[in-house]
Image 1: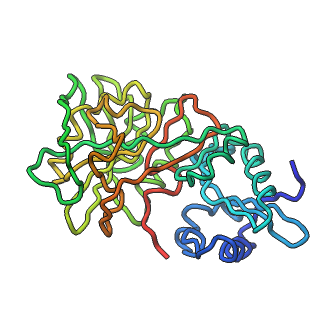
Image 2: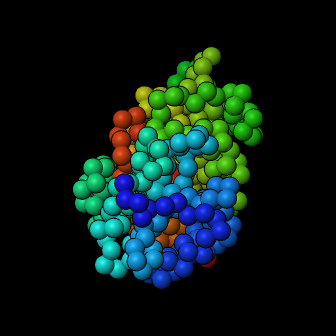
Image 3: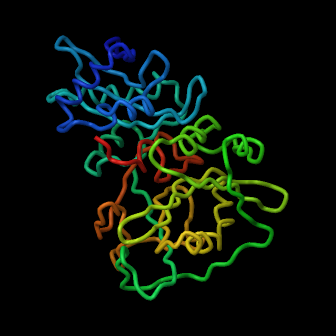
Length: 324
């Protein structure tokens, strides 16, 4: 490990802000907005940023988000930037991040497609997230462009029901997080991400299957000028239990008057719960609703380990408002 790589203390926050403002290409909202910076990157008197320095100062920078409150949590890479002409130092920094943080699993949600070879070179697994959707049965659609109306038959499984969680205390009393799920998310993370997120309201449900509670699922109702869309943004549980959600998406879409439900994910089979995999542009399922952009959008990611790994829309720094 190079001795010119170090973690940045909070007292040197301006080092991060100034470097990104000079090298990112625009003012990055996650570091220039004080509230967002503190929410994502503040860790006591330290920041979740490492820098690689040379004789001219910062040559490359990498910021990350903790998946748990453990001493060595799994992490999501959020910001990676190198000074012009210092791409090699940037690659070295990215290659050292997993070891320096002690993470068992390191991943990043929403990487640029043209950077995928870099992650392959570093020994990681880059891939495209699956975009699943399920249409509400309507005569017309204002946000989706539906050329082929596909709504698979989908019924609830016997003995399965959803219970909405009011707070993290209820989650802790109801649901035991499976130890094998990756990345490792804990109750601290669930509370911070879904009950204390400052800009969105999330709906967190425990999935009951008879006497057991094998999974937790998180939705968000996205309001736009044209109506409402339901988004499945996280699932914590065994991959094999994802099908327990069968039938409940229709129920929630009806309750919240949503035109469709969509899900960006990797690691689960959405068809088990009645979703349709968007494999082409026969239908347009918009990702951007405020303002509406009727265009299909692909998301790419990388992970250091694919075993038991799942990724969803709200992981990392995604599913957030674009605040300046």
